[in-house]
Image (cartoon, rainbow, N blue to C red; front, side):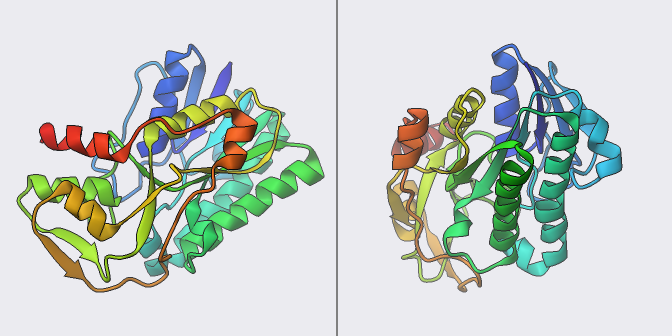
Length: 283
């Protein structure tokens, strides 16, 4: 099958690309290589790559005629940078998603699988609002134009190749980076806020299952268990430092995965504790 992946050189997108290639699919990636949180942009030698912005209709439309399925992973994906630059979030997450859907519609793509976020459940920030706007457009293109869409709301994804650059990197990788460097683990005040962590391999597995599933709608991808930042820091070890609180972030996330399990037969298999133990052993 021919698959198009937007944002396929980022953390989650690159893992999806690798799995698709391993399964024997022909993969084309659209990525503009501009994310500030990545130290490198990952390429699979068996995939094809186009350096372009997913919001650029004129530049990218022809790519969609290549594809049976589209995985839309491209995003401005951090909360605090979205507060600093809301217009960029609107362009990438809202206009970009509209462009992906319109191109897919015109090219006769069979299905678009959209990477969304648990921030939809309460984060008051441009990232959450623009990603939810993308969800609404997926639903509109399904209802109005008959384009099949599946929306996955990712909770806190961790695993190999997660971005480590800067203060807004995902917290598991950030804490491990700080531990390796002998630096204190920087906990955003008050530290009691709780997050549901899901391994990237489990996220990829759900995305692959979605290719051949005829359902549409919104599905959570989390573990169904959460940890406070203080508990996470204790699990990893080392000194800690408390930072000022941040605007726009939810106090607690916890995934209800019952619908995802019922529809896809999917359950998470990888435990956070095991990943951290192995990661510390290999520092």
